[in-house]
Amino acid sequence: MEYRGTGDTGPTIKYRRPWHAAGKRPGMNKVLSGSVAGLVATAPMTAAMVMLHRQLPPHQRHPLPPREVTVRTAASVGAHEAVDTEEKRESATWVSHFGYGAVTGALYGLVANRFPGPPVARGILWGLTVWAGSYLGWLPLTGMRRSAIRQPPQREALMIASHVVFGGATGVVHDRLSR
Image (cartoon, rainbow, N blue to C red; front, top):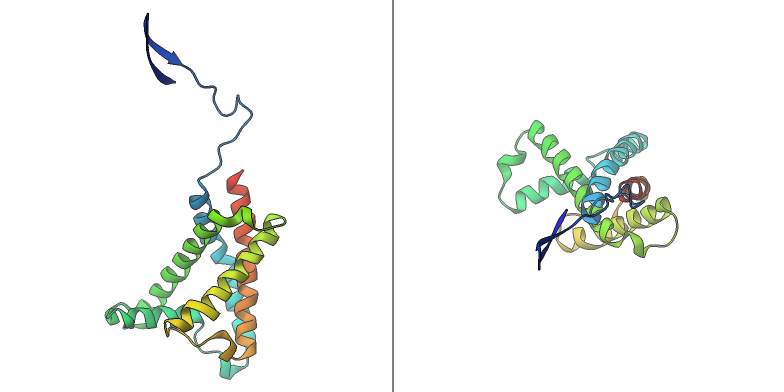
């Protein structure tokens, strides 16, 4: 129901048809659906990272980038106590990793329709964009991590593959939520 001012005979009330009667379904807000999609997509991404990490040569099985970045970020802002025990480092890593997935998913929600192809392809393209922007861009620029081109190829292949998983899942989940 919507109030439409007053007429000669008093207030005029206009009734809107419910969305189901109009043949439409309300989609989630673009940013919200992207954020939820990114949060959800971080789970299979993380599973891929863990699985692929186990396949690395033993000398390359040091902590993965989400943990490295979390610990360095905490140190850079003077929050050493946030990561001063193994339990805190693990918790902070999970929160920051899934939080970053939600934030990049929110950005995807804003630009998803600008990418060509079906949702999974658009998502994969987005996942690779996130990887490049992070591992070739802001992480090296801020000193949080060496550039991807200076990392062992197997470790970067792991990160690229996991971002393909993240992107594909983000694209599919976002598409479902946006319908």
